[in-house]
Figure 1 (cartoon, one colour):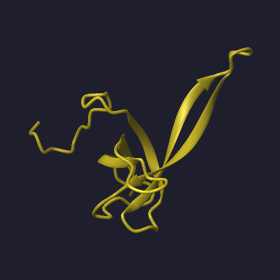
Figure 2: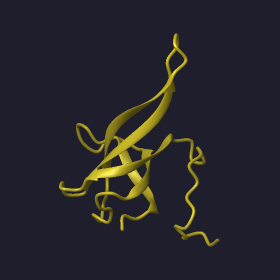
Figure 3: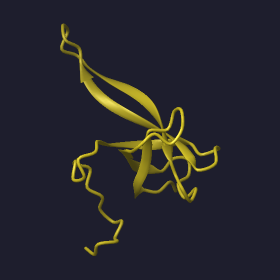
Figure 4: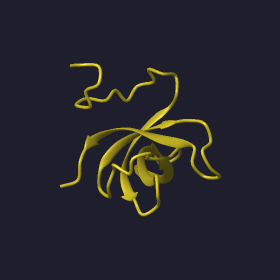
Length: 95
């Protein structure tokens, strides 16, 4: 795998910044996408597992990512009032 290849993106903390994996749910804004990240949690008392989701606004400089794409986002410096994440790479494009 070459250095610039996007075939396999590492989701671990290689740069020391937290990374999350999610689906783009909106791409209507300029240079911004909304990414929904699902997390599997366990109830402390009843031990039942459930899915919790949260939406993050992420910076997309070239408007390259579309609704339905599976992407990786990484924490970055604040770019606006609500944008604290940037899109690092594409895992699976929408068909």
